[in-house]
Amino acid sequence: MKLSISKILAVFVSLIAYASAATAQDFKPVLLYDIGGKFDKSFNEAAYRGVERFNQETGIAFRDFEPNSETQYEQALKRFARRKADIIVAVGVGYSVAVRNAAQRFPDIKFTIIDGIVDLPNVQSITFKENEGSFLVGMIAGMTTKTGKVGFIGGMDIPLIRRFQAGYQQGVTFTNADVDFIENYVGTTPAAWNDPIKAAEMAKSQYARGVDVIFSAAGPSGLGVINAAKDDGKLAIGVDSNQNHVQPGSVLTSMLKRVDLAVYQAMQEARDGTWAPGHRILGLPEGGVDYALDEHNASLITDEMKARLDDARAKIIAGEIIVSDVAGSNAGH
Picture 1 (cartoon, rainbow, N blue to C red):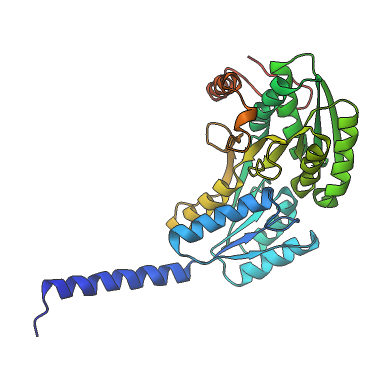
Picture 2 (picture 1 turned 60 degrees about the horizontal axis):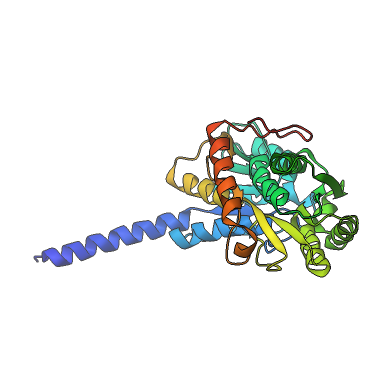
């Protein structure tokens, strides 16, 4: 029996499709969120967008988990490791100890931790230069304030969030050296990420003291700051995801932290066989941080402001402006 060329080609294409489907079914990625839920409009939601992009582009299903407390971190990591996940991506510095313990227990499983650093042969650590992105939104705050007072509200008082504050404060003074700076932190435990009421109270207190722009690096708690800005007729700056749409006209801009890019790249590399352990840092040159500009805040950012921001971005990338990650330092230029 002779097969026509068209039939042979059809069989060949079918075999390729079958092999691709089998490969897709065999690859098992997992995403573990931080406390606050996947739709927090901030950090976790950025991670979710990354895994959704991976799913849409590859057709590969993923599993994810939303913990209610830090006590569930290690349990979840080990549960998915026992199920032979191909890669487990854990988002949040709070996972650091849990990832270390799980990775030592399951040396054949690939782990990627975002915002933490774990030095093991089966762990990839991805951190960001939040200070560089925060410098840009600080510049915007410094160029926008009319009262000469700007504020910062952090979530949990940890070195990571102090890095946001440091960059922001340097950006403010880079454009406006005479600005007064007020800071508050929601708390010192993970509960600080999920207390928008307390964050709103802090914001209202700052606004009452003359502050007219507040940058909140507080996860879901930051939504309280944005709502307070709307209530008081002031301005807020969002974080992690683009939050300009949350209260259009009241959100000056958002400091973008591309957690979505980190999640997407980790899963793509694990699937393609190019995943590697070690520490990767995503800053302005890598497209890991930036400020958000869209239809919701276009009227708040002038062409002159954009030109100054473009110039500063280029100089940071070129090393002509050094943004410290330590609070109280001045940007070198």
